[in-house]
Amino acid sequence: MAKNAVVMEGIFYEINGIKILEDINLTIKENDFLAIIGPNGGGKSTLLKIIMGLLKPQKGTVKVFGHLPHESLHKIGYLPQITHFETDFPINVFETVLMGRYHGPLHNYSKDDEKSVLKSLQNVNMLDYKEQQIGELSGGQLQRVLIARALTREPQILLLDEPTASIDPQMQKNFYELLSKLRNEMAVVMVSHDIGVVSSYVETIACLNRRLFSHGPVETAKKGLEEAYKCPIDLIAHGIPHRVLREH
Amino acid sequence: MLEFLQYQFMQNAFIAAILVSIACGVVGTYVVIKKIVFISGGISHAAFGGIGLGYLWGINPILTAIPFSIISAILMGGVSKKVNISEDTAIGIMWSVGMALGIIFINLSPGYAPDLFSYLFGSILTVPSSDLVIMLILDLIIIFTVLAFNREFMAISFDEEFAQVIGVRSNLFYMVLLGLVALSVVVLIKVVGIIMVIALLTIPAAISKQFTYNLRNLMILSIGLGMVLTSGGLWLSYLFDLSSGATIVIVLGIAFVIASLLKKSLEQPIKA
Image 1: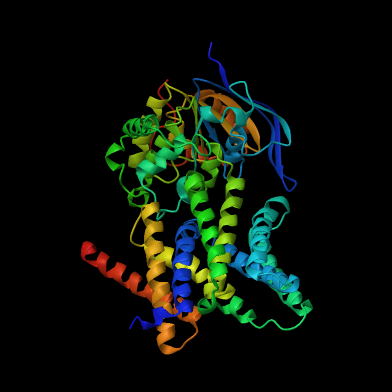
Image 2: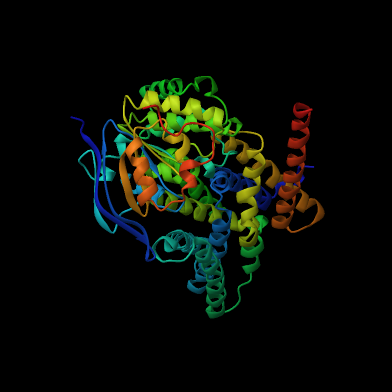
């Protein structure tokens, strides 16, 4: 029986009186591969930030591996949206990933930390780029580096915010292959507004548009999507010429 | 050509140039990469309130400027997190209120404020040895703080959200960083004056950033450039009998233009 990685009960979150999340109940198992789908502004990123304890809900409880979010931060790996990165920032790939090994004030990075960084870079096939300045990377490469930064923390759950938004279709395939590999070692949760590609890789889907709809396996969730979910239907059909669902 | 160095005030001026270059190379690097130029401008202008307070209480204005600029830095950075106004607005308010307070304090002070202009526009030639000691101490505080917390400063400058996820106390270290900006403002005031402080905090680092992607090299290069350009400006101001603060800033500005053109011409052959 798989343990619970995240348990959210009765979460309400609002900013300036505007409800962002309403009555969210969500359980993520330690071996889940979950996509949280929903329109922009549907509260997806907020949900991730609540799991990480960066935002505190007004109501409800969150447990991450049985503890409060900020007590379990060391078990969480996080990939932010990469759109907000300054690409001319004076930092190279190795230094970027090394940041993931932060131990607190006045603790220097150790040889073990450096080894872990190299291993993580190997894991995402970016070892050859370790001396490169991050501005010299493509979107897909930067994303891999940031995944390595999350992995070097040896997380038990990996949270990815809109990971496919800024990489081209060719890189997306590589990206999902990487995730398929990683999901054997940790829970993987990604949020996306693009159900098309996502659903052919992940195992379960939850639909989020202020409330949580139809959380479940991809095939059944799809039905729930069309009925209960208020996001536009073209999000599902999407008009792209590949299968949305796996053969079954 | 070097005969002017025999004067005590000239020696002091060159020591001052070196001391400011250290502060602006180290802190200026963070100001530029974290894009906190505007708040740094706010802190430097608000520091004028501290200068005024010094006149009012009859003590060295540099000493009163230290707590005053630190408090205004914390207010600017912190208020927007507590109250529902943007940091931008908080800066605008503190910027002008700080300066206004300085003027009122000076109005209330008995007698004249003869060297007031030296705080506004800088007066590197009149830096007394006692101020050099204060500048040196502030430089040392800056250097040791950065040596101790460079990991945190790097993390919050690069990706504040991720910094929080890995357990960096982002708000705290942002405040510490603003505190360092406040200290460097105090170091710089005597040299270029409140109004032009921001030039030294941004230009050396902005030039260096075009030539290196390594943070430590960036700081070292900025310090070196700061020393050369400030001393160069000082020498030119002596040669042409111009205001030293303004000359230094003009030299910095010209250097920035030259460096940018140089950088462009260096890149051209690669593209072709």
